Image (cartoon, rainbow, N blue to C red; front, side, top):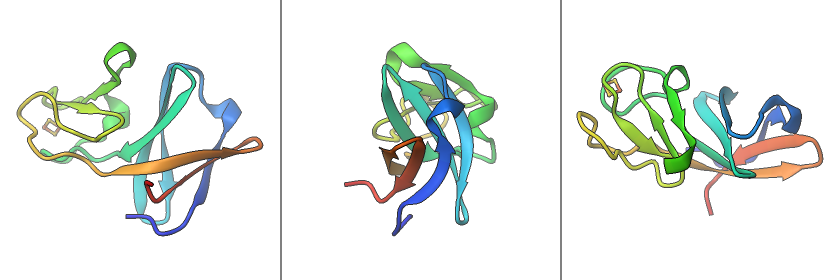
Length: 107
Ligand code: FES
């Protein structure tokens, strides 16, 4: 949960498609860019303790695959789309100001 917008990266830090882990306060967030659109979801898998930035980005499906048990999470909704994970991961808003990428509360 984020109440304020936090600068987490520069536009030049991400290719397209690409993903990276960023920190916003106590939140470890997976920041992704696909087809010019930024997405931000919680970086910790909802199934067990694995970091989604260590997984695989499936840009065509807007999904990231967990490296541990291969669950898939939708970048826009955070929904778990493949077992064993059933719970979604949190999603965040993303905006760009100049060269800066900010994450914050989702509208
Ligand atoms: S830890 Fe991610 S699917 Fe099990």
